[in-house]
Length: 216
Image 1 (cartoon, rainbow, N blue to C red):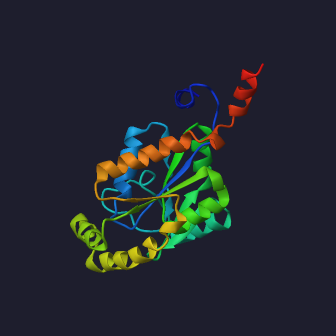
Image 2 (cartoon, helix red, strand yellow):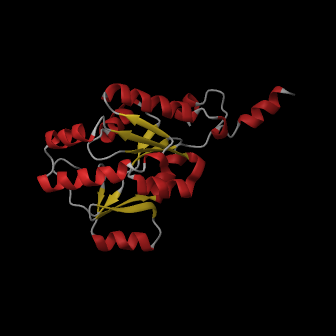
Image 3 (cartoon, one colour):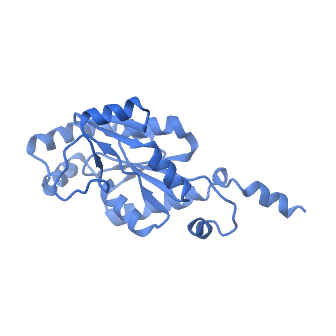
């Protein structure tokens, strides 16, 4: 396909990248994800299913697929998720079919999921998964960002801060760990990681044929 040829001018062909961004809420992963998607036409977001209520400004099918608990449980029973997890008493899951369709189109897949989802995804897809964890400069700054964001009540912010400590403790389950003290430079680092991972020899499935051709 054209986009694959642009990414792979020598036609080596490669396996797609399952690119995971995780962070405590408010540490910047959503902003970085939006910047990646705007800058990189070969990357597409995996849209999760969730049982949580839709927030003002969100669009069903774009931000999340919003479903009730009964439907979510039905999808779990039918093995329709690559991974799913409980977060703040709600459920979130990554649909298998959507990810397969994105990879089949020649694009890489971006995931905005927590450490539980990242772990499950890695267990399923192994070497095709690249995991990046975004840290805040400090928990104090993280708390200030959550207050400034003004999207959650005080009790929700307190719960997010309590969860942040647990999430940070899983930093060593990631391939890359970055401190977001400047959103632009952190975004640039994340995009550099993605571009480098695309070039890994282990992903160039057609490289062996090219090498054999050199020896003819």
